[in-house]
Structures are given as structure tokens and as C-alpha cells.
Length: 242
Image (cartoon, rainbow, N blue to C red; front, side):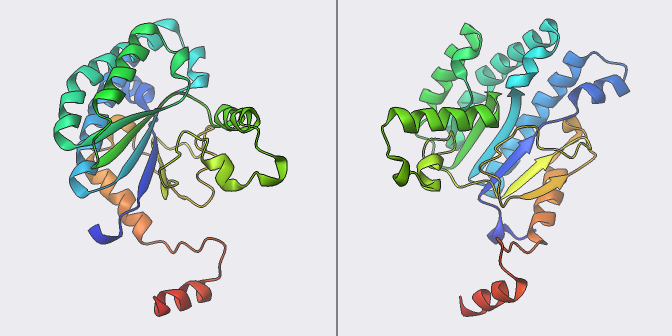
């Protein structure tokens, strides 16, 4: 893997905790706990190799339809994660950010999240973005409402106008989207931002997605030619003139 050509921003859809647990005769909550350990390892690995922006899709706005006991267990794990990992983030210069409707989360969760975001705000080594109570279509609606509220004239609305009002404002768009556990769909995730992202799907369930698996995804990314709508000849010519 070429450490000099890492993507600037990687976004991951964490999938397969439940199936991982079922295959082992365990409850879904045990799968989520194993998934939380995988989060810790992947965040640590990404920080070590110098990745600047990492976004993890941890709880979508559609996940509220899951059993209440499972949702409650997920939020308990999140609180445990924040308590254990915020000190580590401070030491390593990791800035935590949240993408999604924080106010729609339980009081204890949103209180802990807001404190963690504030505590780690000065971390300049890496942005760790947690997509929580998040849906991309809702994010776009939110951005449009903010544009209207700001009184921006219709003829002055550009792609930059919209991008500046998304949760990712100030960060580069994801270069690479990874989804674990074999599913090959985007599930309402960062739809505006990933227009030209490379997609990587792996059958490996999230709890088994180790740093070695992350390295495979990054190597696959580096093997691709990103053309952004241009021909390969144009890309080659631009590279030769760089």
C-alpha cells in the first residue's frame, strides 16, 4: 500500500453485526459489541497511517424501526465507547464530529456526544465523523431549508452553496466508500457527497473487518483510475504535465 496516495476521506457503512452474531449462536447485542471493538481498531489504524477524515455510518434514521431492546443496547454501547475513547482521541489529536439529527437522540446520548465533540474540537490529526440518526435525503432537505432561511436568491444557489450547508462542510467529499457484509447498496448514505467516490464492497462482516481488511480496501482504491468524467487519455495527459 502506498502511504503517499491515501484517500483524503473514507466513509464506511458498518454492516453485518447481527448476521455475525447469528452465525455464532449469539444475540444481536453481542454482535454490536464485537462491532464496537472493530470500530476502535479501525479508528486506531486509520490514525496510525495518517488518514485525515473517517466517517462511520453507525445508526441511520431508519434504524429506529428495529426492536427497542436492540436500539437501547446500541446507545448503551455508544455511551461506553465515548467514555473509553474520548481520552484516547484527545491524546491522538482526533476530532469527533456527528452527522445527523442529534436532537432526536436520547438525552443521555446527545449530552455525551455534545461534550465529546466539544472536548475533542481542537484535534487536528484526524476527523472522526459518526453518522448517527442520519439519512442523506433528510440532510439535503435540511441544507435546502437553511438556504431558504438564509435568503439566498435562487440564481445564486450553486453546488458550493449546498455543500456548505451539509454536515460535511469543511471536509473533502469521500474518496472511498466501503460497505461490509456483502450488501451492495448505499442505504441513503452521503448521497450528495459521494458522486465520484470509489465503492468497495466486501463479504466480510463488520466485526471481522480488521486493519488487514482495511488495508485491502485501500489497496483496491489505489489500483483504480479516478477519471471524474474524463477520458483515460485526458487523465494521463494531465498526469504527465503535472
